[in-house]
Length: 248
Image (tube, rainbow, N blue to C red; front, side, top):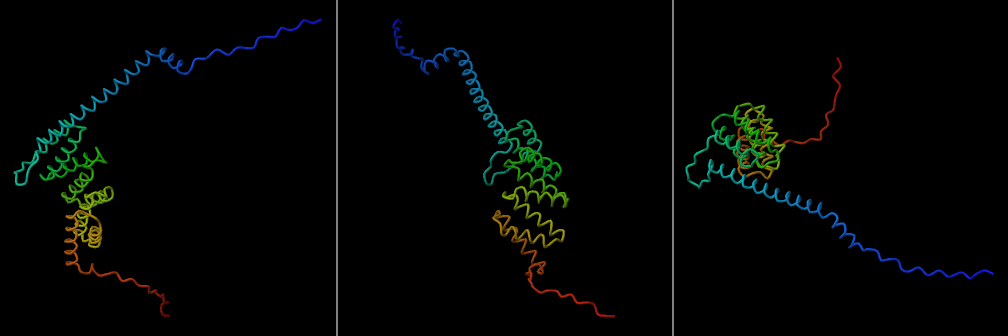
């Protein structure tokens, strides 16, 4: 006779597990020290960046102030004393890396140009453009390079330099002035059709008013001296018929 089996007790509810909040608190407690160190490091980086930016701004202001001392703003009718190129170049070296240094070097190039030192001027203009090819002074500096070649009567180099301004800075006012000067060089070389084409191009473009008026005046003078250039091209659909030579 078999004994009756004793029924086993029903399993009770599983013990309640810790929620995600408890896990997070535990993790934070265990990693409190590394977290505090990391937070302190982030604060140091942020504060350092702010200090560096502030110092950079103050240095830029100081550089601009130094440039203004050399080239003070003037009013209409005031006597202007041009700064010496050497002083401008000294400032450019002392404030290298700041926008004021680029402006000082550009002004030094202009001063050297006005003194007839065209090769030295060209060197400064080239340095300005090379330092910041996308900068606000790049187009004017490239035009200065071309004008320096032009002033030295090196027409081949000047034509190439003007064309580079036209191609590289086509949306800048410098491009219109480059076209005007390039057209003048073509006229000097007796290349009247090339000059006329540039004058007409300036007339159709949205150039500066000075360049536009200068181009129209030069165009009128060119056509007055060479009226044959104003003759329209006559289109024809005629077909040339080849005839055999007469028999001998």
